[in-house]
Image 1 (tube, rainbow, N blue to C red):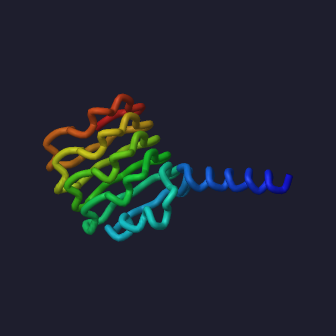
Image 2: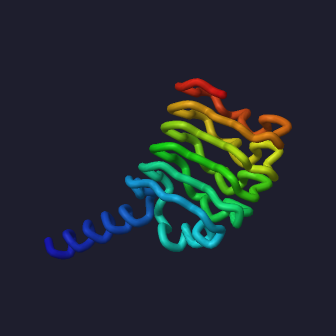
Length: 147
């Protein structure tokens, strides 16, 4: 009986730490490239962020450290940075609130959001350099307004 209990406990622990988990109910803000690069080291099993995500900082040039994120339970705000693409968000399928992309002067399209299929709130895009909406082809639902 004791061996069965240990075996079941081991299997449960393996399952718990192997599969993605909801994390960061309070959300997270990134203001430097180093914070983005360290995200998978600090939160290795975090693929479903329960709160909002803010990406704001001229130092930010890529989002590669965020590749494991699949859902964001709050807002996703991307603003005032040096991003040329959004490839690090390639596994993101859901933003459960507003998606806002503003003042990203090197961003000419939305490549990297190709797997995003649902926005639970509004879509705000204010970016004077944006030439097209390439990257949003998979988006099928916006539950709020889009601007």
